[in-house]
Image (cartoon, rainbow, N blue to C red; front, top):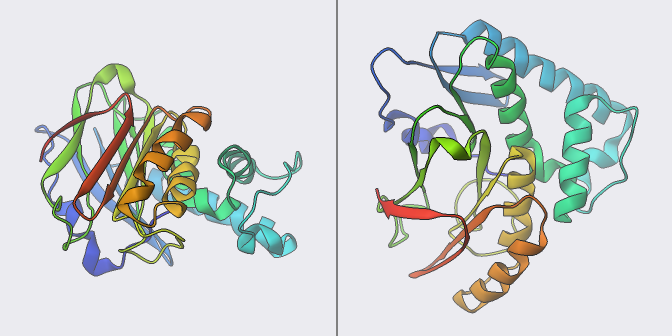
Length: 246
């Protein structure tokens, strides 16, 4: 789970979209999404985002542990859909459910928009849900002080979509991480799981010596397809991942 301040969201203005695509921001209180789709779906995206917030706020009002727990909580069959997805992701990754919130919201909004647009990207604090019909390149932001800053990206073929690509950092942003990695990026068909797994793996990376341990953990988390770890001047890669110059 990554949350960046407004001044850190410069990456939203560095995308290159084919002619005719529409890009727009959806913002309400703490929710701040960037969306790219075939049409201007700002109204639909706002409705979907507000629905996510409503589900989460109502559940948290009677289940305070959901907001604060740093460990997985049991599944709740009576919980609303987004809460159940977060609980499931947290159980699989071994973290608290809020570690998956950015990815879960991004995917929930993206899936809603797919009924209007056959391709969509939803970015939520650096965590993304993508469903594209063409090859897509996603840049990796590891912070301005990283030797990898602005230099690497991930290339994704159309056969990979839909998927989530989420990043946890112990050096940038306001998300909780017990590690020191500049970036731990995870790819999974489930954006909530990608977000939760990035947090889990990021928590154990406190020095470059921990990269091997992180890459050993990655394949033990079901549905994780690829992991990228960046810390100082070291890089580790596991899984189906094509790194290219940014």
